[in-house]
Image (cartoon, rainbow, N blue to C red):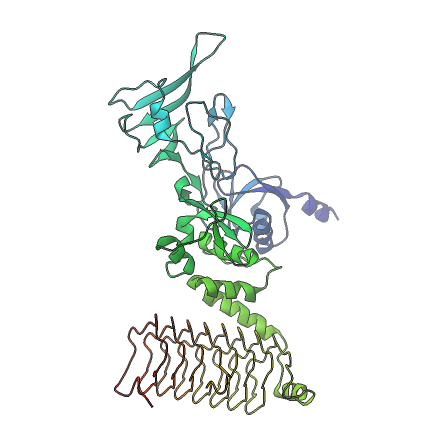
Length: 488
């Protein structure tokens, strides 16, 4: 009982690394992993390292003293916080303390909006004030104010500069606090990176505002976000100047945190599959593989239907009815030669499933996982596979041909490394599909819409591309021969 009471009373206060505000009181659990999990949730950061006030790293519960002040980081080293900074006799937030609120500055300093507790000061305002005294080659400039009740002059801000006061772009300090580049006091990102205020941008994601930095957004050079902010991309903005992104803010949060710190942290209330799809949409390469394994483990833990279960469902329904089987786990099941027409398989797991010689005409397979599946000789006329994943799948002789208005929709499908020899895509919608390194030998793309598709390093020997829409197609490294683009 005494031990239990001791555990209850053993509490600590944890701040984010480099901060003196926003701390959380936390009761210590028994396990270190649980402690990190609680800290991450309380501070809303992917905490992985804990330090005491002196910067010593702690890695076990037994080393923590009751009522101790601790600092949590995302993996970066301890950030020392000076304790003797003051301004006009008042304690002010250090620019390296996230979330502080500075006291009013003198009238001769233009106080711009600040981020993470750092001031934004315009050097031209400082230098243009007639009350400032300086010499052309001096290294110190002092601003002063005169009290109405006395003739004493009190220094407000000591500004040390390495340039002429006539030059606007300078390196200087205010109260020995560094001003970097154009004179803006820097802040810190959530993981300790020093950030200039000019780097900060706002994103309006599905109605929720996110503040981050340009360097964070473009960290993954191959991502869609990097292209939006590093190329000449015409991005829409809301009335407050925030960049508009029409995606779910809940699923975007783990994406942004990963770009900040390189760690995947997903709240228990979020669906891992949703975060995975979001990472694929933005092409965050560092997340996709890790999340794919998480999704796979989750799928394996779910009960898998058998061939017998599927046949039982089919026997109780008409072949013309729109049977709803969306979200089922059919991974690895042998469903070969079954009649699966008109069935709704949206977001179903068909990973490594045998669907050879199946009839999937007019089936809804939108966002389904068909990676590694065998669809040899399957009929998919009029089917909808928008956003489906068919990486490493086998579709030899599969038929997607448009007959009498039954046009297959395969927009944005991933066919990477797939085997598609002699598949018939005549008249199909294949816009923005990824066929990288796929085998398309003797495929029929007659009249197909391939606009924006990626055919990099594909085998297109003998493929029929007659009347196909090839606007914006990437054919880098593709293998052609004399039979390609025939008129048969």
